[in-house]
Structures are given as structure tokens and as C-alpha cells.
Length: 247
Image (cartoon, rainbow, N blue to C red; front, side, top):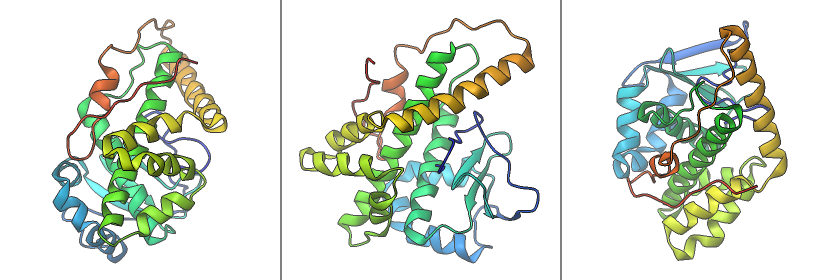
């Protein structure tokens, strides 16, 4: 999750500034007090959603706290397996960013990340979908905690400009069930024109830069027919309906 330009897996990762202080912890992630507290706050989540717990314990080599982190709140480094978090995140938002990035780790592990074989338009559509799906995961987890008397993560998402409209869409459909709320949140991600424009611009710049550096010919590949059904899975393993808008 980032505040200005998207950081998604290996697509647009910005390295921490040279002067940033980076402190890292490897499994069981118990050497950094701030991180230990965040994980403790999420213990209910990891007990309920084993896939997230297993992703943290088996797919993440280190969780690092970066101070300061410029232009982002968190990101995943596929090459190193490190999950990077900004040091100044308040508790509720810290939980949200951690869960969001854990979902990106899952996406990477499951092979849903776009490849250079895709056209630039399909590559960008894959990025959109992965970001929307990660937002859904964070909201489902926040909703689970809210129902158990721990509203901090939900309040952080509901008040954060980057996610507030998506949280509102989820909440509006929640009475119809978690699957319906997840589908509504996924669709809502696309409704913000500024969000789509920002992600499209940064993703395409990265795509063109990689194309130039590799001297490859323009790609012609398209997203597979099963891309969205493979991607859109709730933290408990149930599928939810998702599809990009036609426009």
C-alpha cells in the first residue's frame, strides 16, 4: 500500500532511502518490539485464517521496519522475501498495511503476478486487480476484528483516503454476506478515477522501462481466462466474484 505511486511486488518497488534506518526480524519475528506488538494484535486473525499465518511464517524471510519510508507505507521484495513496513504507522493502519502486503506475498507465491509477456494494457489490468484483491483481504480481516471488539484496523481503513471509499462499499453490502461485501469492495477499487490513473501511469512507466532495458519486442500476451477466478479468494479460502469493469 502506498500513498502516492503504487508499489506492487516486483513491479514498481522503490528502495528505502540511503539514509533510512532499517531494522529487520526473521521468523518468529520476535526481536522488534513494535513488530511483536502488531503480530500480537493480529493473533486472532492468524488463528482464524491459517493461510495468512502460513504465508508469514513460510514465505516471508524478514519483516523490516524502515524509518523513514518515502512514498510508501509498505511493500514486498520478491527477490529477497522481505516485507517492508514504514516505522511511523499507527497501530490500526500498521495492521492494515501488514495484511495488505501479506496478500501480495500470497499472490506472488500463487503465480498470479503479471509477466512481461502480457501487453501493457493487460499488465496494468493485472496490477489493478491485485491491488483491489489485496484491499479486499484487508477489509475482510478488519471486519473480522471489528466484530470481535477490535475496531482499530477497520477505523484506520475507513478513515484513510486511499481506502475509505472501498471500505464504505464493503460496509454497504455487508448485510448480504462477506462474499457480497468483498465483491462490492473489489468493484469499488475501480470507481476512483484518480486511483486508476495513478496506478496506470506508474505501472506503464515501469513496463516501458523494463521493455527498453531488456530490448524485447512489444508483447502480445493476454490475461488468462481464469485469472480473476484464481486471484479472488477470501482469507478463509472461499471464492468471491470479481471482474474488471468493461471501460
